[in-house]
Length: 148
Image 1: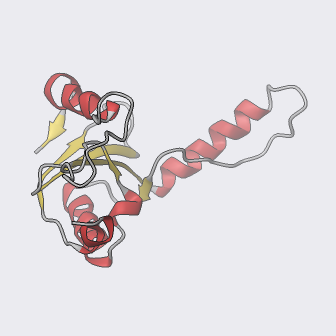
Image 2: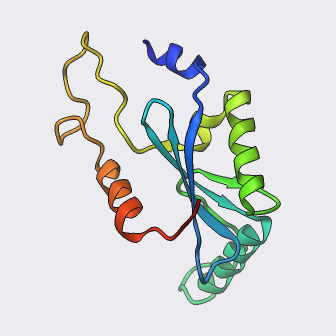
């Protein structure tokens, strides 16, 4: 299966894990396991999270020499802004992203795709295994407090 075929193939989530942050009511890390076994991750946030990040940046910039205090927010990993962080809203959003073909741009894959026999060269320096795959496994087994 080519990358384009994989993109067009609608995967079905078999598990969705939502990380509960005890001290953050505006953000959730979400892991999704698809029927092919691949894991994906993204961060779900509410508009108040963005507002809070902008305020933190403003306060921080006041204390840095040669900066003009400004309210802004930069997001370094995929973030999905939703009205509510309840499980139903998160799962409905995932379903819609899949149906609209936007899942791949909103989630980061943390496991390697199935090996293509035509291309046996590993694509990463550690023999083809994504570093985040090990991190995700540890998080799932040892760290993550989840709502199933």
